[in-house]
Length: 349
Image (cartoon, rainbow, N blue to C red; front, side):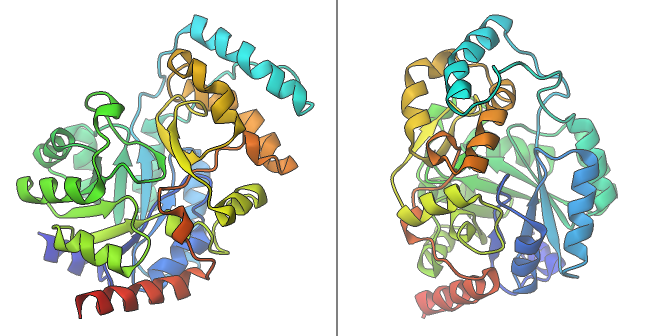
C-alpha cells in the first residue's frame, strides 16, 4: 500500500510539510509540492470559505499534489461555564496590560467541523489528514468517493490501530518532540509522549498501513533515521517555520531565531501543545489544570495572542515549535527541500 500511495501522489522525495495553523500558507505548501514533496494547508481554524480560498490560492501556484489538515471535534463542543469564568478573570490583567477591553466569551468557540469537512471535500486535495480525533465510517466513505487519501494522527499504538480498523490510507506518528498541538484522542495526552523513533517503530511493526514520521525531524539525517525505523515518509514542521513563505509573526520569527527552550503547555488553548517557553506559560502554569478545554480556551486567548502579535510582544504569544528548533534554517522553502533531499541521500550513502 505504501508504494501505491507514494505512486498515487507522484512524490519525488519522502518529505511532507506539516500543516501548522498560523504558519502554513499556500505559498509554503506550493513551494514544497513544487520541490517534489507534499505541501499542506492547515484548515483546522479556517472557515469553510477561507479553506476553499486557500486551496484555490495554492492551485494557482502549483499543479502538484497537496494536502489539507482538519481538527476532528464536535460542531458544538461542550464547556464548563465556571471554568470559563475563572479563565476570563485570569486573562483580564493581561488584557489591561496590552490596552485591550476585558475579555469575554465569544458566541462560537470554533468553526463547525462538519462544514469544514464539506469544504475540504469540495476543495479535492489529494490528501486529507486529521488530528484531535477520528472520523466515522460515513465521513471516511465521503472522502474515498472524492478520491482523497486519508491520513490519521496517532500518538500511541491504540490510536494507530483505530485508524487502521477504520480503513485509513496511512498514519502519521506524532512523537513527543513535535511542535504544536498534541493529536492524542485515546487516553491522557501525558501518557502518549513517546519519542518519535520509538513510536514509528512500534506502529510500523504493528499496522498494515504506511507510517509517516513526525516530531524532531530537522535534516536529512533525521529523515533517514526515521525511515530506518519503518517510516515511509517524514513530516517536518519546525524545520519550515523560518522560511520566508511561512506566516509566523515577527515576534514569533525572532523567538525562533533565538532558539530558546520549548515546553508543553495547555495555557494557550486548553490542549497540550509544545512551543517556545515564555512569560505567559510561566504565569498561567499554576492554573493549567483548571483552564477550559480546547477549543474554548483557544477562543478565549485569541484576542490576547492577536494583540501580542501586533505589538511584537512575544511573551504573550503562542510560538509553537518542536524540540529541534535550534536546527531550523532560514532558507526559502524550495532551497530547504533540496537540501533535505541531498542530506537524506547522503545519509543513506
